[in-house]
Image (cartoon, rainbow, N blue to C red):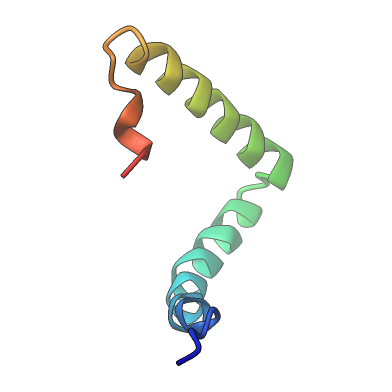
Length: 63
């Protein structure tokens, strides 16, 4: 039996679209561009790493 690799994508894409489309429109409406979203995400990642590394908690994103 072959595994359908697109099954999860077919399941998750509509749900994520319903969540992310209004969020994206709200950000654009406030004048926040994709570069700002990337910069904030990068900063959040760096800050999280600097906070969790000394505590030995690097597995938060790992299952």
